[in-house]
Length: 276
Length: 276
DNA sequence: CGGCGGTGGATTATCGATAATCGCGAGTGG
DNA sequence: CCACTCGCGATTATCGATAATCCACCGCCG
Image (cartoon, rainbow over all chains, first blue to last red; front, side, top):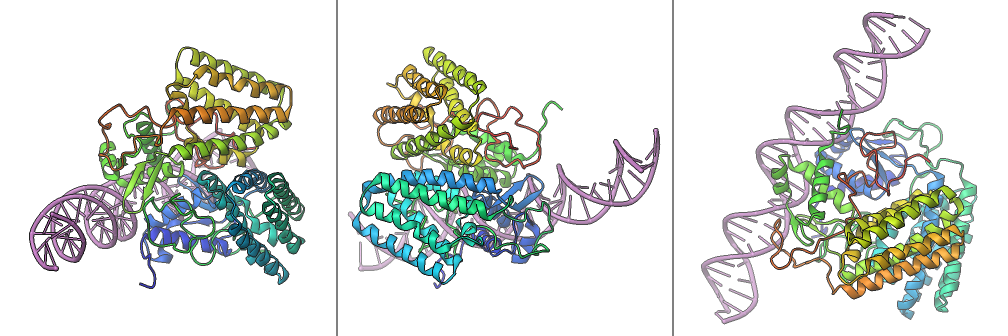
């Protein structure tokens, strides 16, 4: 009874792979071989296959027919694009959120900002990125617009806030502070101000990211050998930790149906409660 | 040599299912049983399973663990939400497009509007919806922003323009005319005007749709028997024909890898050429 | 008469094995 | 020396069968 959800092997495999990718065991560009993973985990190919398919839908890996899966390594341009789109979606979100925002919603948001600041102060960029993700997810969630949530969620894995924060030369504390004007605007119930703050947030985030990185984000050397980290530097702490809060990273896209369902009780910030 | 791509059974199954759904053989809410489809097509469960997974990622069907797939029947609220988000994305798209818009881009857009009008005049709402989809896709395409394209495409299956147009009591010609101001604004290179036109387009589309339908869009009677159409009326020409232009509906999400690839040569309006 | 646990049929999830396909490198002919 | 074809090893895609799970029905008990 300790673990409620024992089921759906394929989800567990997905979690495993996600963790492995996030931890850098599969650097961007590296291949993931179904049979190998299957043997490693002591399962058959089928669940591994499905897990990879799901990860593809999340934008984490890329699958080519008859050639298998490899960890996606988005170009710098793509990441910047993602920032732009997110800015739009979240601006829209802010306007919508203002229509339903209760005072009770404000406290948690402030806590998140504070947590972000604390994390930044002690140099824990990883934690900061996680909290950052939660903040934005929260905003979208308040909206109550599930469709917006869907597309937003679909975009986040690409946005990869974490990379930005983990980039050397980025002022983590300043990044955290960028969220305060957003919340302040919400407090004042001023939609235009909120939108401006959000735009500014993404502009600065984007340009500091722009400055910090050269062209290709991951070491997308092409068809590198699989597992082990590439030669030179350690593969730069890859990909968004914005995903996978704590242990369970799955349950993202709405695969659990409409009816109540076990597992993923403490669902991460981006998951809706499923009934309006 | 007549057909370049014979492969990937699972894609063919996906096409088949998509067509079956669009044609109304699987009305919204109906279940799709893996083993049954497999037997029908003379294949094993595996490809069917994968096809269903893909359709889920496209938002066409809904899968619940151990309970199978059923055709999604989005609520009216969800469709309205989708309109809202699309309005935002396409407004953003218009601004971006203006930065790269060449005069050569304008002609095809005008042709599409004309085609839309012609289709509306002769009452061919189906064709009109298709062209409508192409127009909007084109706009996004001009943008050159692939990330925007990705999320936009992700949203379209839900937006289901077709339903709106097919709704009785909607003035199809007026709907077509709504696109002219958008193009005019683009011609004048006036971003604010373009955004206003787009907003207006979606507002009107949304509200006329709002008026035309009662709560649930499809006949989501719950667990109806599978295949055959439900009792009363024919199942109301369901779901977006905006998808599936002509025969081949697949090749949507970027499953065909980065390198050149056969099949889907004349890819539909929403597919990018894959290299910048 | 109504709620409840057991039981069976239907369907999905997983398995292990086989067929299909790809990329690469050796070998051959020009 | 180069272009090209032909296997070969590796890996994915598909298959058929089995285990796991759900749902609805049924009889029993209160």
